[in-house]
Length: 250
Image (tube, rainbow, N blue to C red; front, side):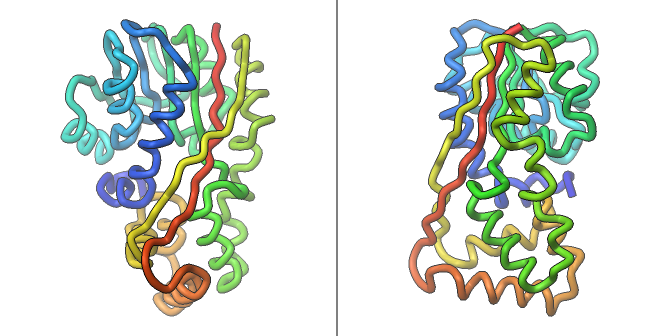
C-alpha cells in the first residue's frame, strides 16, 4: 500500500503541494532554521520547505523505501532517511513538520511527543476526512452505497478522532507545546475529466485505493459508475480539499 510512490503521487501527492505552500506561509518560520519532515512520503512538503522557507537544512524521514526512492529522485538539496514517527532518535532540530501522516501512525500522542522532544517548533496538517476533502468524501459515499461494509474503512469515520480541530489541539497541548493554534486550509482540486479523477483510485496507494483493490471487479466498477453519474459529464471536475493545520512551540 505504501510502496508505490508514483501511484500515491497521482492519487493525493499532487494535491498536498498547494496545501504545503499555504501551510508554510501560515507557519511563518524565519530563514536559516534546521527542519525535519516526518513521514515525508514522496517529498511534497520537503520540496516546498526548500522552495519557500530558506532552511539551513532539511531531512525527510519515512518508513517506506519506495516513497523515499521517489523523493530522492524528485527533490534535490534534502537528506532522506528511513525513519519512524514514534522514534526519531537523537535528532535535534529547530522545526518539525508532518504532512498528511498522523492518521496512519499507530500511537499519535507518542508521535507528537517525539515531535516536541526533538523540535522547538512543531506543525502538521491532515485532510479533513469528515467532509472537507471532497475527492475522498465522494468516493466513500459511493462506496458505502454499493458496499455497506465500506463504512468500516471510511476515513471520515476512522480518522475523525485525530484529524478534526479539537483532537489536534489536544494532541499538541498534551505534548507540552505552547501557543497552540489550529486553522483550515482549502485548495482547489481540479481534474481534467472523470478518468483523471477515477484512475488514481485503482493505483492501490492510499486508504481508499487500497480498499478498492480488495473488491471484486463488479463492485469496483459499480462504484466507478455511480461516481461518474454524480460528477460533471464533460469538461473539468472542479472540487476543493480542506486540511486542518496545527502549530505550537516548545
